[in-house]
Structure formats: C-alpha cells, structure tokens
Amino acid sequence: MGDEVFDLAVGEVSRPVGLTGDVKIEPLTDFPDRFLQLVGCTVRLKHRSGRTEMAVVKECRLRGRGAVLSFEGYGSREAADALRGALVMIPESSAAPLPEGHYYWHQILGLRAITVSGKDLGKIEDILRTPAHDVYVAQKAMIPAVKEIVREIDLAAGCMIVDLPEEEG
Image (cartoon, rainbow, N blue to C red; front, side):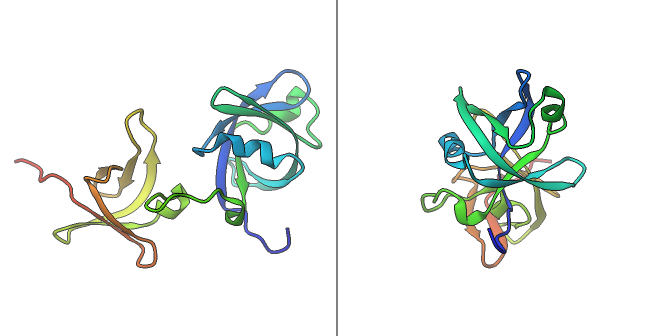
C-alpha cells in the first residue's frame, strides 16, 4: 500500500444486504468484474461527510450489473447501514486499462471546456449517467459525451474542446 493514493471511485454503497454486514454496490465502472479482484485487498471508503477509512474486502458476489461486498470489521446490518452512500476507492495504479480515447471520470472532472470557436464554458463539475450516453456538466453548458460533440480531450493541458450546436435566439 505504501504511499499510494486511493483516488479512483469504482462503486458506491447503496444499501445493506441481509443481516451479516454485506452491502450492495452500485458500480461506477464499466468493469463490474473488477470487484472480484478486490477480495483480500484494502480499499478506501469515502463517506458523504468527507470522512474516509481503510477497509479490507472480505467477500464479493456479483449480482446483476453490481456487486455485493463484505468488509472485515462490518459484521452486522447496522454496521453496513453506516456505509450507505460511501464511495469505494482504489488506487489509480489498480485501474483497468482503457482503450485509447476513453477516460475515467476523475480524469474528466475539472477539465476546462472550450468550444471550437474559443468560448470558455467553464470547468466540468459533474457527470450525469443517462441511458444513451454520459453528459458532462460544465459551469455554462451541458455537454453530451459523444465524439460528434467532444472533439478533443487534452489531459496535459487540462481542457476539452467541444463543438456544440449554436443556440438559437
């Protein structure tokens, strides 16, 4: 573990499952099988309050598109309920490699969105998951995360070049 930074959220605890401390995980990854690789590993749990704690994943069962995890030291429904809303964080070094042109959310958040004509739309503050595609929420625009709109992502420069249709009126 050493000096690794646990900055990649791969799931969110949605609710307790059963009476023995298991929790349902809503994946924040396109690779839900990766939860099986976490058994025996340490993760950081980031609570909604901002408090964080380290926890060892004891067991994992895949269920639908999500997973059910149990953590060492959480053996009751009440203990599991205290984890509701917590993010399950792993080191970026443990992330599954992505194909070229694909990015993790933490890489997109904070980028400055600029139109092809040079208009600054502000920083990407949030990402909405929709059935069709993700939507990047900048300070001054909602940007569909499709290649026809997002023309370039330059992580080194901290910006995203977008080609939004001109607004009428």
